[in-house]
Amino acid sequence: MVLRASNLRQVAPSLRSALLAWFKKHQRRLPWRVKPSAYATVVSELMCQQTQIATVLPYFERWVSKWPDFANLAKAEEAEVLAHWAGLGYYSRAKNLWRLAQEVAALSEVPTTAAGWQNFRGVGPYTAAAIASIAFREPVAVVDGNVIRVLARLMGERQEFRDGAQAMKYFQPLANQLVDPQHPGDFNQAMMELGALVCRKAGPLCDACPLADFCQSRGKSDLEVVPRFTPKKRQFATVDRLVVLAGSQVLLRRYGATAKRLGGMCELPTAESLQLTLQTEPAQIAKRTIGTVTYAERLHAVKLTSDLKKRIKTDAELEWVEMTELAHASLSGPHRQWLQKWFTRNDPPKPGKSP
Ligand code: SF4
Image 1 (cartoon, rainbow, N blue to C red):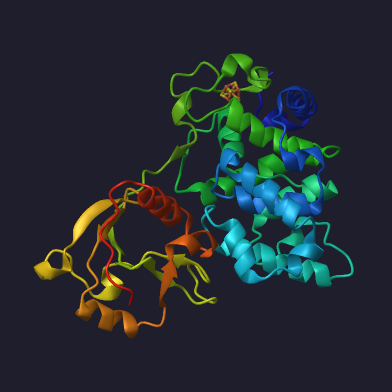
Image 2: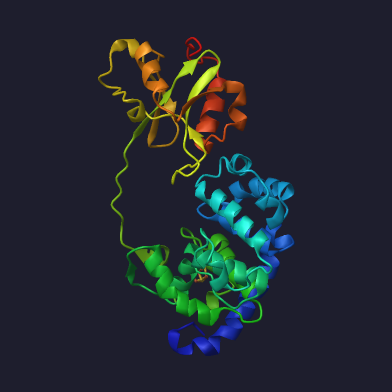
């Protein structure tokens, strides 16, 4: 029987059983599922926000072997925390996790509800529900992009959503009614896993789907465009970044610890921040475009002119870092990878003299 708002109570028990049986057999063996705990759930949930699981796995393993619980993480130095996060991006998550560990370590009891977890900075409704349901068996539903897709297709929902937040709000009551009250953590993880592995955005595997008998969209020609979202108008600005070398040192910008973006982290300085207009700057800058970090970041090697030296001296955020020390420099992931690749190539740019 397909799932409809009108028969939800009737259908929910068999849908839950089918989903949980599938999850038991087909779930990916992830380190935070092997020995679930509040700490492992918090770390994995924060790491997995906007990041693929395959990328997170080595970071998670390193993190929990260095800091196995909230108390240990609470005692860590901020620079060390950021260095262990380097490469995962969205560094505010690392700082939020570190602060959260300090707050939790100071409590006599760890919160056990989604409402309690939402009081921590960086923990939104989705993460709070994941922690409370997985680690404390609170029957609250997790609604992320994967769950939205599964629910929209199950229910044959054809309305267009402005964005993910609006869709999340729309599907939360339905998800709350469907969540298994006995096994909320497994149910939530199973829904997310089904969305990731079977009810995929492109090429859903309906023939292998444990919920096929309940689904209103199975076999429909417009299946892949459900859920529907209003197309976004995107405008990408290209950022010009500089590689400035002096002897064995490279110039980096270190953001203050309290900076909203990349607080405490380093990256290659932008041309704009050094008041260099690459198109019109005099020839002695000896600019050459040497690559791209991401689709929107161009890199240029520039000569360390006396004029540039003066500008660098007046900018307190700029620092010279030995190339051999880059591994410890809390450098943002794409820049670190790009520089490492560049320095191992045969044609590095000619360095200038030490500043
Ligand atoms: S039957 Fe197909 S569309 Fe429906 S939930 Fe399963 S994979 Fe998704």
